[in-house]
Image (cartoon, rainbow, N blue to C red):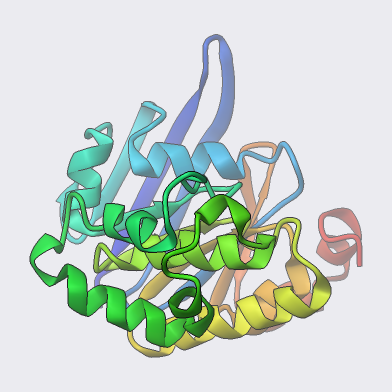
Length: 236
């Protein structure tokens, strides 16, 4: 089975600073793959390079059997690779429903109503608040809205960048259960997180990113069992 997303030897950065130093990574159809690492490891730069926001200096990115290295973000979205960025990035003065509808701007416009209903089924709280201004939602509800907006584009793969950031422990638990649920429907997920233990609970495979390099990859059981990695990278 060929990879849905395949990254080979990716280098990227900002100005003279190189952040990613030869990253290799794959996500198969229907997988949850976690990318774990501390602040400054290069996780957000990786997401932005995949999404076309940061240019790759060398290496290749393939998605759904097509080269997408340094393609425009809009073209990458149109292919079905959707990035839900860190910090939610909702439009606070627009309603919940309007925020969701923006998710289908480049893709799946004809099925906007059906997809909105699907999102409301996954996130019933958003249905209750569909006419409410997004900026008045709680942090957990805003994260639901950000993910729901991504789902409106009918992604083949969705990148979730630090989705648990700033949420209470109870909401974090609910969030990871929802990630498992949308994956169970067949959606591939690249989960980029600092929350190690709960990410490993839902992931099929994981990569550890440290100083712009992949230092380990394998099953969650392999990651948990490695004593050096537990001490040096995960703080366990």
